[in-house]
Every structure is written in C-alpha cells, then in structure tokens.
Length: 179
Image (cartoon, rainbow, N blue to C red; front, side, top):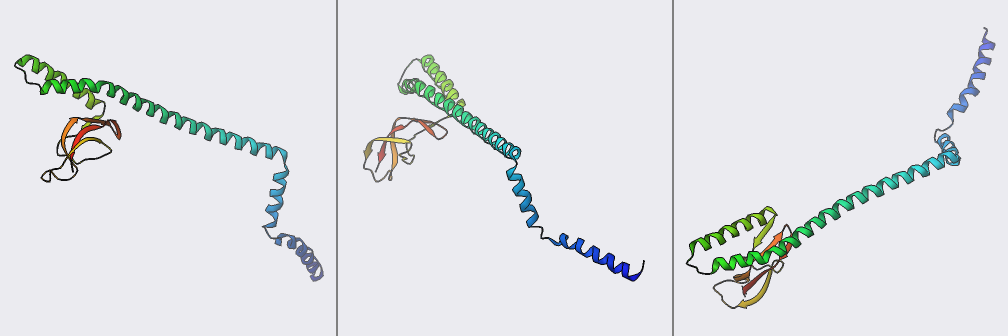
C-alpha cells in the first residue's frame, strides 16, 4: 500500500467513527419510546401492576385479620373475667367476716387462692390498695375525705378492687380519696 491509499483508507474510517460520537443520552430515549408503544409491553406492565396490587391487598387483609382475631380474643377474655369478678368479691367478703369454723375459713381461703391463681394465669392484674396514689384512669372515686396527714390524692379506703388485663381496665377500683 502506498501513502495515497493509506490516506484514503483513513478518510473512509473517519466518517465511520463520527456516528459513534452520538451522545448516549439520546439513544435510550428512543428505546424508551419504542417500549411504551409496544402493546404487549403495556399489557405486561398492567398485569404486573394488578398482580402487585392484589398481593399488597392480600397482605393487608391478612394483617387486619390477625389484628381482629387478637382483639376478639382479648375482648372475650376481658368479658369472661368481668363475669367472674362477683365471685372474687363474694369470696373476699367471706374472708373478711369473723367465723369460728376453722374448716370453713380454710376452704374459703383455698378457693380464693385458686381463683387468684387462675386470674393471674390469664394475665389479670389486681390493683387498688390503701396508700396508692389516685389515678382517674384506674380508680373510680366515690368518696373523698379532707385529712392533711394522709397527703393529697391518696387512696384512703378501697371498697372494690380494680382489675386489668394489660392496658385494658376490666373493672375500675371503687375508692375513697384524700384531697
């Protein structure tokens, strides 16, 4: 090859390299436009979106069902405990009554102990004791007394103990408060 032929070959190569210098940003735009016009691609995207939405909806339904089931169980447990509380109150009154029959008193104490174990096993917390601070979220003040020696907002007397399961109050404690 001579020099003239080499120059001619280089000139032919230069125009070929010029189209490669096209900015890369423009090329993907054209590809995206062609993707958007493809009806099969649009149908695929629509079906995929519908499937994703359905999966998300099912997941939300499953979470809501679990939450409702737990709430129903908690409400059922609280209702059952509320129906047992009069038995607890009667046993407590029986224990506070003086009696000469030791066997009778022992039987009532054993029954009260078993009932308390059952309530504790269900997660029931008993609250409301004289000397505790008054909390309107837990206590129902039915009486008050003015006595500076007792302090302010302190339970003086508990007429009926309160019960709660977790954060849910099953029965408010009926109390007398010192103001």
